Length: 164
Image 1: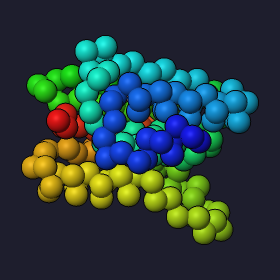
Image 2: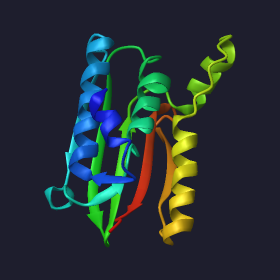
Image 3: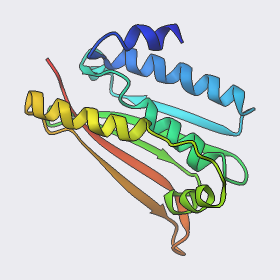
Image 4: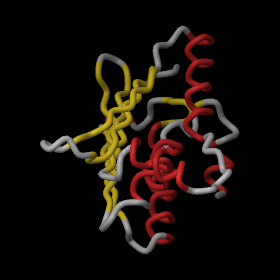
């Protein structure tokens, strides 16, 4: 909690700090949900000190857990990858959950009034950062399917401009 509060005081933080906070978040959620999922984070070591917008990745990981993995039969898996490609950081968050279509169906069948805002707020933040700094950060959602056309999870791809 303290790390999140500290990080939120800055517009940007080093990748290594974002990953440290993300790692703690995933550890806590894994304990909370009694090992219902495993996770792996891969980061190119050359980008650990690069600056990126604060709290950028966590909302998408949270969505993967709450909307994808919690409704999955059996154990889930989340993998986060960060690589430097053409002076931009390419981040993928991939889960083997129920997929966005099924998650939407489940949500529609429940009488929950909670409105998930994490990824929407992050998307709006990226639009603002793009307009302020002339950067080209973007987010893409990909519905994963197996060879039979059944949902096999979700991949979120985030292109992050390195901020100086």
